[in-house]
Length: 169
Ligand code: ADP
Image (tube, rainbow, N blue to C red; front, side, top):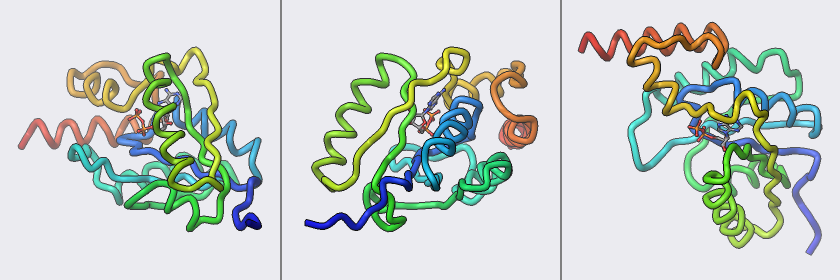
C-alpha cells in the first residue's frame, strides 16, 4: 500500500484547558523537528471543560503566533481521523511521568490499530515543566495561587478572569 500521509507533518492533540508552558515546550520542540505542526484542540467527552472549545482554540492561537509552521485547529471525534484529514503521518505527544506512560502506551497501540499509517512520537517533558497539568493549574487558580511561572501572561489573565466569573455565579 502506498503511503498517503507525510512524515514531515505532525499533529499534536490535546484539550488545552488551558494551554501552559509544558504544552508550549512540546509545540516549540515539535516545530523544530517537523516541517509543519498542526495543534488539534479537542473535546473531553468525560467532563465539561473550563473554557469552551472556541476559547481554547483562541488562547492557543494567541501563544503560538511566533511559530510560523504551527497551525491551530479544533477537532471532534477520533484523533487519528483528524490526523489523517490533515495529511499528517505523525501524532506528537508529550510524556511527563511514568504514570503518563501507561495511558500513552495504550493509546499509541490503539491508534496504531485504528490507523497503521500513523505513528506516535513522544517528547519527554522538560524537567521544569514535568509537574504541570491543566487540571492542577485550574485548581491553583481557584485558590488564588501564583501562576506566572506556569503559563504565558495572556493565558494567566484569561484563567484568573474565568475563575472570578465562576466564583461570582
Ligand atoms: P493536560 O494533561 O495538561 O490537561 P492535555 O490533555 O491537553 O493536557 O494534553 C495534551 C498532550 O500534552 C498530551 O500528550 C500530554 O501528555 C502533553 N502534556 C501535558 N502536560 C505536559 C507537560 N507539562 N509537559 C509535556 N507534555 C505535556
